[in-house]
Length: 112
Length: 111
Image (cartoon, rainbow over the protein chains, first blue to last red):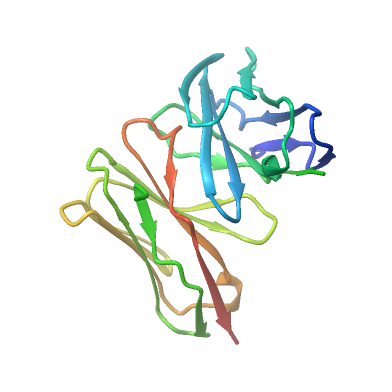
């Protein structure tokens, strides 16, 4: 079974731009979560989607948003990029809310 | 204070050593406890998953959870250079989709 895939793997943007990241979960998994990983803050939860509905949200500003499609694929969007948004963005999928999460390789975003 | 505190390390051990990695937490609602291994420039890889208190063994890895002390550990026996990575503890309440992570401990196993 194929793992979680994320595209693109690397991205360079400038301040003020917006970016969209994509995540394809493991086949059959309906829950998709997004995390931000930085050296200073570690892994921080952004939001979780289940059956196209946002079920949980972390403490990030409204510039961070996401959505999930009927095939469980998910996208996250960051608008008005700031230098501090440079991070590894990780997507994780699970069968359901009590199941373990499996992570993708991440998208490394650099904001210049 | 963070909900999950992880021994910061870094840790450097000789090949074959027993390694102990530890986390404490403050949220008594946590029921699911995970350990992930993350190699440089890769996503976290699930190593161990435990529900509630107790021990779980998988090959060279043993996970222990003590909910009364709010303390979890991961033991690695006969450590190998390929075990060199950052180890992350993670916990969640009823929703595994929203996990709280420790900051990670970087382990180096020297041949």
